Amino acid sequence: MRLNAYLARAGVASRRKSGELVKAGRVRVNGEPGQLNTFVEPGDVVELDGQRLEPEPLVYVLLHKPAGAVTTARDPHGRPTVVGLVGHERRVVPVGRLDADTTGALLLTNDGPLAHRLMHPRYEVDKVYEAEVEGEPNDEALARLAEGVELEDGLTAPARVQRLGRSRIEGTIHEGKKHQVKRMLEAVGHPVRRLHRREYACLTLEGLAPGEWRELTEDEVHALRRA
Ligand code: URA
Image 1 (cartoon, rainbow, N blue to C red):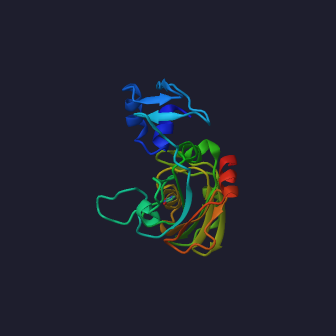
Image 2 (image 1 turned 120 degrees about the horizontal axis):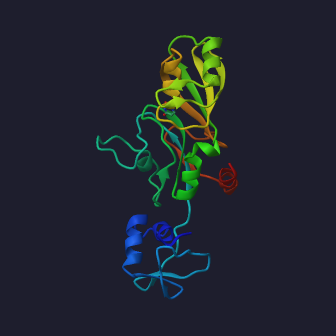
Image 3 (image 1 turned 135 degrees about the horizontal axis):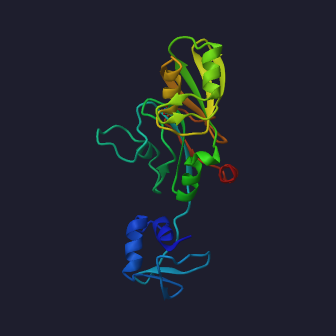
């Protein structure tokens, strides 16, 4: 891992500020002055101002996001945030976002590279949503959702869609455009009343009430890395 990423992981500062510390000559790797392009390997000794650093352990948290919480670390309007709800001693950040009124599965982590990968549509991480909508979507509406819907920022990728009730549908998508599910349903004439993310990749909310969270198991972390 690059030296600035290592410093950020160790909780020293953001990557950018860590880069400044490196440029200022305050960081040594195995006794040598660190450079911006220095790569840190397991077993390397990294020191800041002569103090040895240990990288922060990686943590992965699954939150059952309740309605009303915002997917940020801080909210200027004083609403509860997902980071505050988790209150983890490590600096975790949400992977992607759910709207304030959306409930469901939200992953938070301090593993920046994995978070980045999971958010990239190329990796096609499945997200399963349950939506309660206005009206009763017919087969044609479901077929349009499944094929892909033209939104102002482009055509959505094909989705897996099924009816759960007259006004309830389940949709599995792997993209993460802003308000995507709501905009897709609006585009086929059925605005969303309630939206819930039941699954994120291999993670389900089993055993978690709204507002509760848990750390992922090692198997789950490996599964995410393979996703
Ligand atoms: N799509 C939406 O429209 N909202 C969400 O919160 C998540 C996906």
